[in-house]
Length: 344
Image (spheres, rainbow, N blue to C red):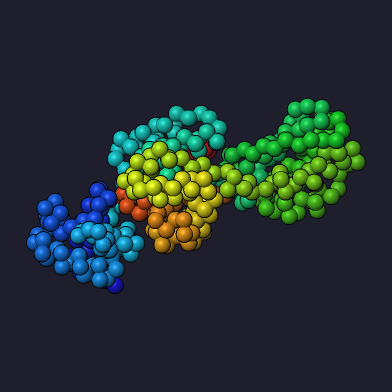
């Protein structure tokens, strides 16, 4: 349903004011604060029309109105200002990430904390998914008489490690030869391809390699698996979000604590949105979320890439969030995160 220009104008100002105050917005408030050129009576009539059309709601205990999910959706799609961060915010994010010379785990933790501090919402970052990762090389390192460290380097520059236990004492010469054999037959394949064809590709080998090859055959799904994303994700920002006015209510406070504790819900929705929108930034509002637990929240999600490997960056907060800034922050962080991880 199309809106007239004056309906769009009033809807924009109602949402702006509600984002600022978290209180129902009245016509006198709009007339006084914004130079809209209409009398309070005219604004009241326009707001009533917007309510009839489903863009605003009228709480029983107040004379003012609040946006509905439909109103927020129209605002995000058609009315909000272009996403942008202030120069000092961009400098803070970029400078912090550029000075990190630490492991991927720490980069993701710091990035999540920065995103939450900038947006004042819950920030969530998933670890890169390795299923489409292309293997560059394998290194086998003896770390004890019957233990080896398997180091997998993928084309994006990331590294994954896993420790394997061997039944017999490790022969370093054989270990070097097996490393060469594995690189010769597996380099250039995706993790998914390796899992499916490993046994066939490594079917012919010298008898003395058997103890180590046998461990690889038994452990191939663990070595070349796509790490469980739900176990490999970071959610930060409880201290920021609970200061939002919505969480002065005990039920709302309880709901956000439950969400933080049950992060699978958030990660599942983030993954679904990225699949639907093919890596573009995506915003889901209230009832658009399939999970009932997220019916009072909005999510902003963006994919970050390391070659063929991808992860996701997102924020979760009340529907009354500053969407333009939130979208800008998620996009900027996703872009810088790829560079920071590849640099390390």
